[in-house]
Image 1 (cartoon, rainbow over the protein chains, first blue to last red):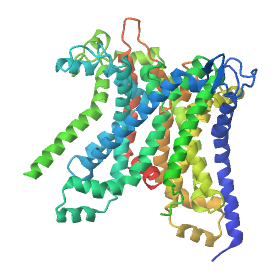
Image 2: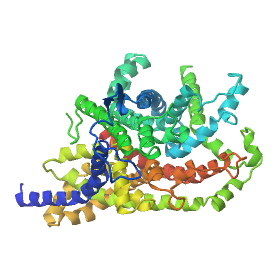
Image 3: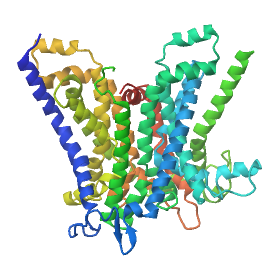
Image 4: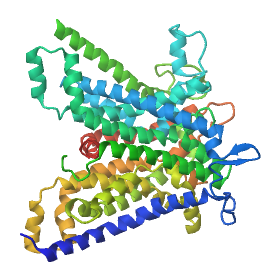
Length: 306
Length: 275
């Protein structure tokens, strides 16, 4: 039975309910983003953000006196882009593979499974700062536990400078991120696995198909949609990562990610124009990746299966 | 025979996994109860237990103030976010209106914003409002990630509530506001607890805004305080105090998460798996 006046009242109420949230969101997200974009086209500094001139896109890229200037030509920015991509791809790949393996381990009920599930939540519950500091201490080159174990077991002959060596530093950061986030991916994968109907496995067992084959042909395709969502969210998170890198290795160039670079320009060097341009670049890259995903997957948001 | 291999294999895998997951925390606790020169030696078992690190934190570093700051900020942020989100979730999940899909997309998009991208704009605004180095700056800026998250998860949960509820309410002729408060709110209570806890943890852990928008120890939150901990003197390693602070902050969080784990996992997976 349709009651037009009632649905109109409901629609009006809906917009009323939405307005406070939308107002705050616009104030805290949309407007500042616009301002950052605006400032990226000026030469403002942090000390005086009121007197500046408009410089167009020269913070991004410009050619002057026979040289390229701007964020896009900055070798340190390019290095940070490389670091970010390596970090994102490697950590997400490791987290997904390990997460699925752990989920498979926990999928069948066994004694102590509840304890394992609880243990898995511990790295996720620990604040990022604490994880970073804990692992920095364990990876300390002189007094760290990791080097101690390696030296005692004879695997290495000298202590390794985990956080000072350029390649190892990024690897250490990836290690901590994997340690911290694999449980999250594993829980998602477990939830997806538990939605797979048991009859599939029974049928495969009766037919005598090898378990690994069952995994690739039956399980994986069924959990792929949920996994894909997890992978995309993790990728986007990894591309904008700041905390781990800053806390473990500061703002040094060898490990800086896009966000670390942008903040360093903005806050440490006080260059609002240049820093805002770098910040906007991070936003554009993430937006591009998001758009690619949306086009590729056509997210169904209304809950109706397609 | 194959059964035995499988069981032993699984036991081994679980053991290795458990060690990998839990050892860092164990070692942090171990380090926190050692002080002075003990830190220069690597040990795997507690030898001389001392709580000097903890007492120094309280007395000299005013760590208690940092904890209070974090509690205040996180609680306010969660309270405001939940209030705004439950109303928005009702509109987004139960009412069909033009532009609803676009709005949901946009809110999801906002949750993907890199925090650096709004740093300049927020900095300008915070200076303008005069709340630099003030907890209000954090409460305000944290909305950028708590609001989209709470709205998204609560909408997802609300969508699953049966339509019959509203039909019964409509027959009684009550207004939408009363409907939300009297009927939906009690039903959504578990979901709100889960979402609130997740948002609380996110606000508690936030680092970038807390680092950039606060200056003095009076307004620092826990993550920044921990990142900036220094030793008692130049000759002492800061790691003892650092681990003590970490343990103080982490154990309650772990207790919270373990207590509410089923609800929280449901909240997390609802956003991603169903979503």
